Image (tube, rainbow, N blue to C red):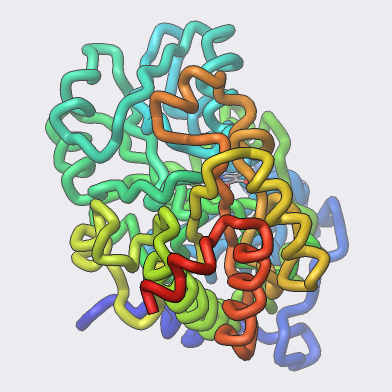
Length: 408
Ligand code: PLP
């Protein structure tokens, strides 16, 4: 039977302690025991169903973790206080001093900065490569490589990783394939394609209300146990624990993710086609012109579309800034970083979320000054949104009115 990520979430049943339809929130940092022996066994990880201390685990965090594991098709998951709080312990858990990582060069700026500037302090080096070229990825693997790291759909360039192809390489060289699936929840299920570890910044589409910073690591029971180990587990010891009140609220939002993703994808697909037809340089995995359109299609869970993220290139930072300010003024969305909100969010990644990447490297990877990244919102009337966006672009001479008449 086909893997159905949203059904897997819906099929879970958790009740509150008084029969509430939502599980009770565990509002405690510590837990009491009737016997000292059970406390010892819990500390050693040998007492199922018992809780010791909420940095290690808590009922609310376990509920959310299990729902996200069901969505990604992994054995289990560990929720964290942020997306970076998921990414950094995974890398520190899998690498010792002297190890090496092969990473996509187009990834979220914070992850890039961690691998480029922070992990070298622990003698962990990273080679950044074009992840869309499997031969280039393979050539970068060294005897001390431990991790292949990528985003399913990359931030901000929307490059698409061939997860099954990368998983084959990971198997061949005994590496762990770690995939950040933040841009494509439900649409792509990396674990089903062979990823060993799947990470999300829950801050984005999954929570969807821009009120929380949160993350998750989905993987095998063995790996999640390793992360939580009281003696040498990176999640346990680095301490990026999610608060129970927050995990309860993310769990409630997760239940509508399938409906939201369909609307984000529908709206983004509509705008991307229109922008492209208007002659704008548009990148969206759902467009036939996207170099990895067929690859995305071959990996996707059909119903959820190609996601809510698209980019356009308006050729200069000045034009990009003017357009974003005007769009905000016309209430088309917000000039803001982050993604997955009900309102459209737009930013110029070169000077914001990817500013950690040096300018020459930005150029080399195709991250130009005039690039605007859009997280398309849940607008009920996307045609109206397009018409207002188009009038802004005409006013700023981003779209040439004459050319538009000719195209029409
Ligand atoms: N991964 C991706 C793809 C992101 O876009 C971000 C944040 O923008 C992160 C990870 C980091 O997540 P957080 O801000 O929740 O730590």
